[in-house]
Length: 289
Ligand code: HMG
Ligand code: MG
Image (tube, rainbow, N blue to C red; front, side, top):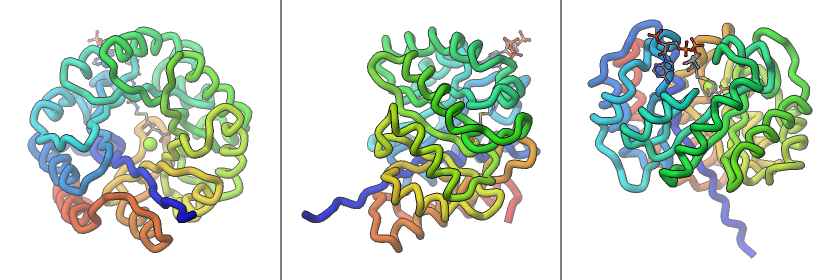
């Protein structure tokens, strides 16, 4: 039997990338970036976040961005929501999918959401209800799956505990995304986390969200593929990072991920030339090389 070697790539540059820029990128530039990415055929583009503008002023224009983009029917435009207020605004803006986000470590959860892990889960309950009423799919991020900038090493069992909390929250399923927030993991550490989480989520259904501070993200992708992962996040131009995770650098670059996957014989349905054109826009609007 011929194995169908397909990987799902979610582009997170407009959200994870632009949340971390020191300058605030104008709305029209953000829209141009998302529109260029839409031409590449991603199944999903994480477009913005409906979070507090006091915490992340870079994305205070979320509703305007959502209203201005030209949507491709085959692409889901997903957004991050930390609470009910964010979810209501996201639905009003026509988000196709909502991502809630918490952590495997208390230190990062507190800095990122001003809440304990327990409190963050409680805040998500009405978000989940709203999403279900609107038939909107959900993703649940677990950050700091290997290391936390505040608490240090994170045990895979702590990752499993937070994954269980998210699964308990949503009766009919939530996509689990494991965030290696600091970009410092090696392949053995990624495999250890996947092994642990595989007891409750099939590995083929886990999404892996890698940052690339140490330059090991592609090696982690190779190992994750061997373990059975078939969904990755990446960021056009390698933009990215979290304002509440000091020391973290950009996400795994989409261009590098696509090249690695194609070389390995994996299909993604994403047009690399269109990603390159979007990267030129990313570079222009952020002033980064
Ligand atoms: P808080 O200060 O505890 O809550 O923040 P609050 O309820 O007191 O709200 C503060 C102010 O924000 C209030 O305004 C609220 O109304 C307003 P004021 O009354 O003072 O004028 N507010 C909002 N405004 C718009 N939209 C909202 C909203 N909520 C409150 N949804 C809160 C708590 C959760 C709101 C805050 O901590 C927050 O927004 N955090 C978001 C942090 C964030 O976006 N981090 C980056 C994304 S996570 C990430 O990058 C990791 C990831 O990539 C995976 C990985 O790499 O690991 C996903
Ligand atoms: Mg991230």
